[in-house]
Length: 309
Image (cartoon, rainbow, N blue to C red; front, side, top):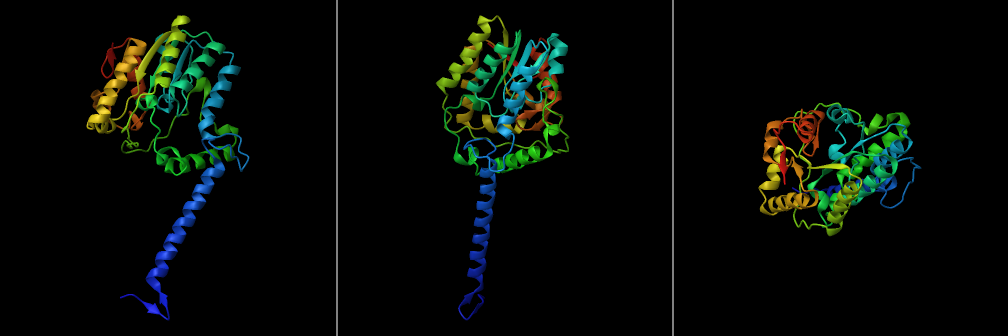
């Protein structure tokens, strides 16, 4: 029974209080994210932070390469999915001093800029280029995925603030652009958001990949292009949807048309590695899966990847 006393409606009061509290919390959290501006979308820096999460890897790795006295000859280029590939794994098989220039949230245009920087700062012989399926998507991702309304933006804001408060000694990156090892307590592979509906291939991004290939050809640099692996559940979600499955097939054909040969790690054989030993989450492999992949790309027996021509 609804309780009312002299015009007081308790149910309505609690309902209004709930919506007011929820709205206030939403505004405060959104204000916090905008004040941090972790992806530097608006140029806001209310707290005078020295670095932001999205720009952190780009700034650090640019400066690391610029200031290094080492003669790097092999480079790893790609998104955050390949930041965990340790350069020692490549050096062991190639004998080439290697630098990991992978950074988060990259597009082919970013990768072209990175490749140009590599050629301006070093004399490379080998470029390991990892390409995500989403990298060629022209379609704008929904506002809930890219804007500051997302949970990931809130988490990244906290990460940025923590990194700045901890000081420069808390850098995520080690020598040669390697990522600090992650402490794992995972019991299952976390499935990241999957949405390839309405995928439209971007001519500009395809052109950027062609420019990378042309630049390497002109300088007689070997390019090994490869598709980013995803966990078994992530892969199944893609292929079970007819639209995204067609997109994946067209994606692979497009890469073969650009590079002539592509190592495909986005396939069902990932089921052999369906364990947290091999994946941090559904799109970020660990060093153990990278070991398998690097050995295959550099001439070893194929147990996972497929060479597409």
